[in-house]
Image (cartoon, rainbow, N blue to C red; front, side, top):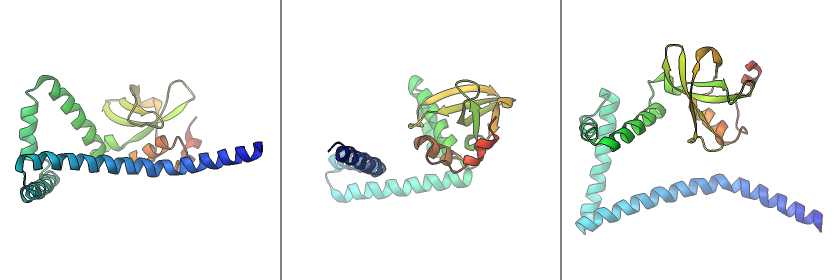
Length: 196
């Protein structure tokens, strides 16, 4: 009976771990659905008319497309610039907004090569190598964000000399996948041979 219990428990764990990615994706979908639903209720509460609410959402969709195309073609949008000016006058909020905007630009920018660079650094001590995102550079000093597994949004920010780094062929998506999967998804495993 003990063997049967072990086998059932093993199958239960395998089934649980195989369903976790599906549950996480469903949670994100439900979160976005609830967010849009709440926004719809707020807009509908003002207009009390489905037609006006629908027009508002269509207009918002078109506005976002226009802002996106303006930024893609010209590098900036006057709507966003105006909002930046207004936010910059509010003491605490301006700092939070500026930092969030920089982080999003770092991860989303197609032109900024610094933000896309992944390196290996010895951390927390010599002989232990971890992947890190290069977030900034000052001459031969690199500012790195070292994400932690399995949640890459938490981690450490450090400054190290360029000589202490080994460049990686991974991009941010591959490095993030490596971190989230706690090393299971590592398609650049040959790089480990270059680490001292």
